[in-house]
Length: 229
Image 1 (spheres, rainbow, N blue to C red):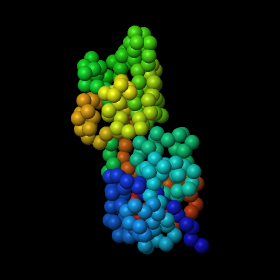
Image 2: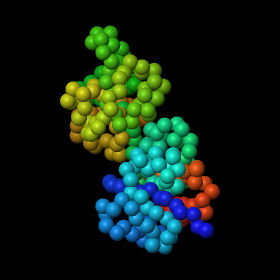
Image 3: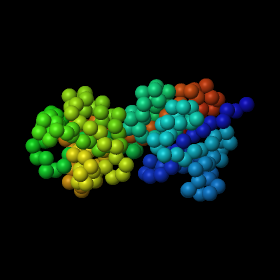
């Protein structure tokens, strides 16, 4: 009996388009009864595979709990997830698309701040003179905390970003940000600049497999096929 395989594809954005291209290049026909908005689908050539269109972050969580067997998401989202989740996932293939960097960015007018060491000084000034911690807006609290601590910056407070992180320093919501960027243009357009040594993580699109699903028949075959991009 052939095992059922659940395969996760990002439900929106550039990542979705690039992942769909992998299927196209390998002459695999994706079927969705209700078109692009459908959250479920299948592969014409593989009746045992169910396609689930999910948020890229959710794909990581579902691979971690084994409800997805194989999935496409960003390396940044894997590294941001809880350690216990990461331990249950194997990265099978890193692709040459979805490339981006998670960086520390500060307002342009902070002319004296060029490096993380300068940021550390500012953080202590905030604490001593303003009696408050430097606020860092981010969608990546785990990676941000880990990076800043590793660089000796401890006097800060994380602010969860729920939207356009670039706007936070200019709406009084935070002093600085960490954000994912592919070209840096959006940061520049919003009067922000990346610290010289402010790269936290380099990321790209990945195909990942849940370790819980390792013994499923047919999993290796489809993973190998989709590795040819």
